[in-house]
Image 1: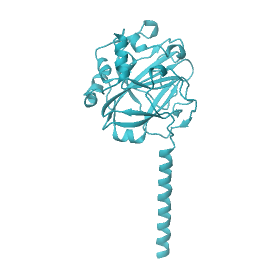
Image 2 (image 1 turned 45 degrees about the vertical axis):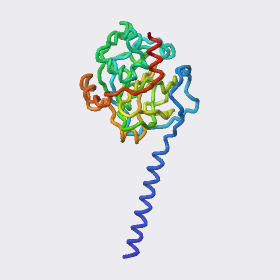
Image 3 (image 1 turned 135 degrees about the vertical axis):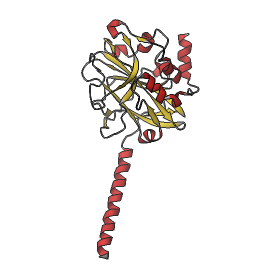
Image 4 (image 1 turned 90 degrees about the vertical axis):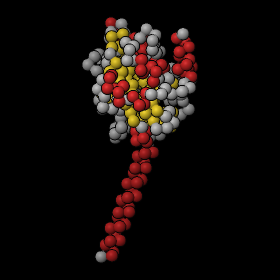
Length: 277
């Protein structure tokens, strides 16, 4: 009997070790291959490094699916390469907002009063609201509109318990650009190869309190998707909005505590304001 118990104990210990090693391997497999951001203004449209990872993150359970932003896409963009350098937020708000400004708490709050009004040929007026994108759908940018020659903007707010580093993992088809708190952290014109395939895991900085993420993706033809998740610890210790919100009013209500204080000292935001003046 003692021999049986020893055998059972040995099996249990081996199983525990295998599970631990498996979890460790799972936690470590997402290599960080972009550090040192945010991007300097001269590099805002520079190509991302060539060492693409092509990691399959289909097993990740924390992909963000609920977003805040314009309720429709910018249409007839002329192809993503041509549209990428254009600030479509500036164009649609007649200079009241631009992309860096929109990715700040101040700019986000302005969407409660500033209207988005693209030209009729580009989709016309858009309302700011909450919507959901199906993570596994390689055409999740379409949103009941044209599937080609479009740009999609999505936003979320991350409430962090302290100043911290986080790892951001985007999937996109085609041209992706991401700003956080007025700073641009990511620029990549190359599609990742699947709705949950990641080429770059990017180290970013979050401040204590609310952090505004603005994610833009431009598409020319074929599949059209954008997805994003952060590292496990970020999803564990931070609150991300929208959560249960279904419209603009409920979004600002649930994110109110995160939007109380604007992050301090963001030079690119100041520079963007000076340029507009």
